[in-house]
Amino acid sequence: MTGPAHPIQTARSLLIAASTLVALTLAGCASVQNTSQQDYVYEMARGCSIPNVWLKRVEPDGRYWVLADPRQEYQFRDCMNAQVKAHPFLDWLTVQKREAKLGTAGGSATTVASVPSGPVMVPIWKVGDEWEYAFKSPSGSGSFVWSVNRVETFDGAQHYVVKTGTREILYRVSDLAASLERLDGVVVLRETPPRLHYSWPLIVGKTWEQDYKQERPVQRQTVNRSGTWTVETEEGVTVPGGTFKTLRIVSRNKNNGAPASELWYAPEVKQWVKIREMLESGVRERELVAYKLAK
Image (cartoon, rainbow, N blue to C red; front, side, top):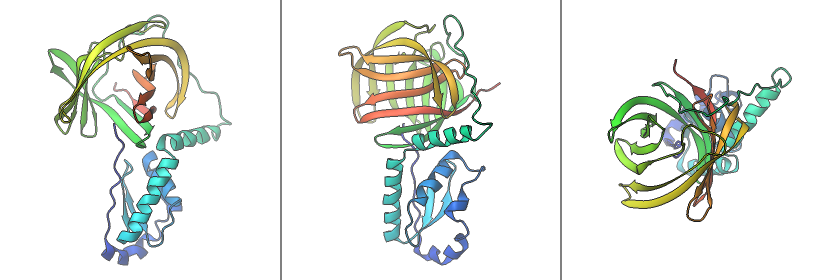
């Protein structure tokens, strides 16, 4: 999953209106009304003082527009890319949350929800459940929101349809196995049989394995994969969205034992709150920023 794009809008003729934007100084842009992505863009822009470049607008998802001529535009974009690479959104957000916590009530202790005693059963998601995540990877950083949009039948089984932007991900209701992904209505990934991120009920020490096929029709690629998963331990985890008691699940390549991912599942959230994936390009990390469970 990729982060939001940052479109640049250039209009040489609009520079005559720059005087009206001077009051919109970078120091005054960040406010409690902004999203974390907006504050992040403003913060990164403070390190890119390019003459005759003004931020015109920053969208809640972090997309931004500038007023500049082409030469300054490219300089500003290169500077912002360097800033984002040096200060990934997930790292920046973690620092902001930590500083905010230290600044409230002397940094009072955080209550950690406990994992229910006994096996953890498959959760029931509802339309309207949402989870917001921040991520960083070798290719970039950013944030995204997963929202349970509806339930539909696929391959004879009920599936939750989770939306993020124009992407839809289908998870089987009975076990949250991943079956299908669509982008703009086009199937971009199908996993047969559906991939088992979990084997319910979850309990420390439980292990399962699976052989499955990943098909990417757009790229005309098919890959056969074999994996093993183990619920290794109960673990308290702090992420930007809070501190949670979790079950840590480790997956490995069944053929060579190489680690593939670590996932921290929090029953309280009905979802994972942190995941580290070992990709060919490097490590991708995603952490929970906020969540909302429908009543």
